[in-house]
Image (tube, rainbow, N blue to C red; front, side, top):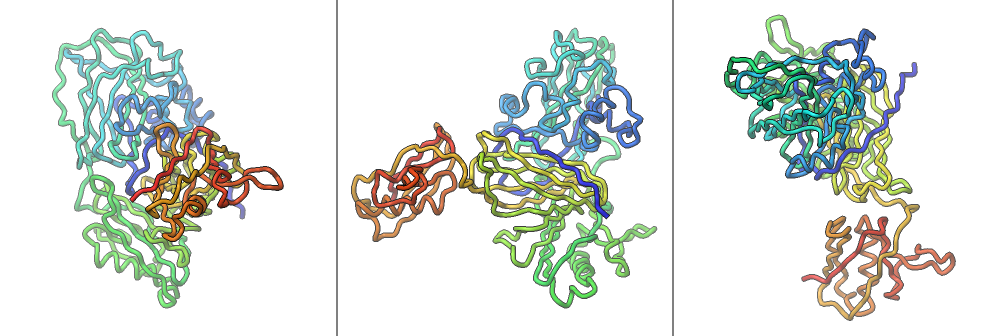
Length: 562
């Protein structure tokens, strides 16, 4: 039977520096006063068609994913992660949705559900933020729409809001909720928007954006007690109890020589706490004995943090050996998560991550991932992936290049459905530089990172920006070559030449060869004698060897170094 397929177009988002280590995505939103997307999600009418008003309009415009992804309205701000960096990543009119495709939540309407808030005698209102996956250090900024802005008639822009409070979340704080005293400016009453930005302080620069519609009344005579500014209520993470995090092994197919990688991520920075690679042999492949063997290894060696099995009525987790694919992963902390992936025998890299083929993250199989990719003829990175979900899954995929974000996509999927996802960059984006990339696949807040490479396309238009000029023999076989755009380094490489090729006529030719073999964003070419085009290989004729780059604003410099 053919499964339904849906094509989901990825959206480009703002640039930020490449993450240097795997992390568990943080997610969250303000719940008091509730954000627009949380209000609509909590009505639970997006699957049965019972929504009305603004929420119904959002469903019709953006689909169910806009609701199920209520805690993933992301945007990105590079270091130092301030408002000026946020403005570059989140354009005016997109403050309520971030860089997600859910623009309906930016629309000015009079029928957004509104929460009445009453400041105390000092203008304080207690507000509550929930983090479904925590990350620290970070901070939450609270803004209010300016007094002269009619929020029912205008999309919110940065000049329409003013900062009223910043709450800092210290490193190591994994609280799932924070209750915060927020001051409302004196004299403010009536309809307004509370705009919040929860910003991670790390290389990824991920933030979460939301708008809450409020009706502000006059100040009361009472005073609001100080909150603990820490977690509140029954959502706190509890250690020492077992929580079902997801299914263990379901439909994963393996072959002899493959490795099954099982990881637990958590802690203050989402670090890998457990990382197991289990080898598939002829013996354990028979009868799928590898499932029980892997579970036994986990339960024997890591039972303080994770158990594989089914929970009995008495609260004991026991492995079900009769139907091994019916077992679950139980963790003792809600702040931790797990990931299972298959490392194919012929494709294991130095870092132990999968290379080509299928990536499995929390029950979602992402197919068509290739380690070596090529830009299209417009110089844009694109990926075509197929995703099959074993359970209801919220999937986010982002493609990071040498200069930051290149493309972003996501979907809310039902169990058993298969999707085609095109992760497409935007032509002419300044982040479209060839080189080492990373694909971040996040399923239900469990993340997998795949290393890959994008090279220039032979059909790309290239600009001639100069040539290699010899001023005589050189004394060192080492050269530094920089591709620059203004003062920004696009690519830098240290290249080694053969020691016997440092003479006046030799080194320019061999430097050109090294550039062509080892660099991503520059080619050295000569004019073809037949076609007259710059497609020929480097020669010993120095002036003929020209630097060809994909952006006419690039410059190429080189120097002989010790």
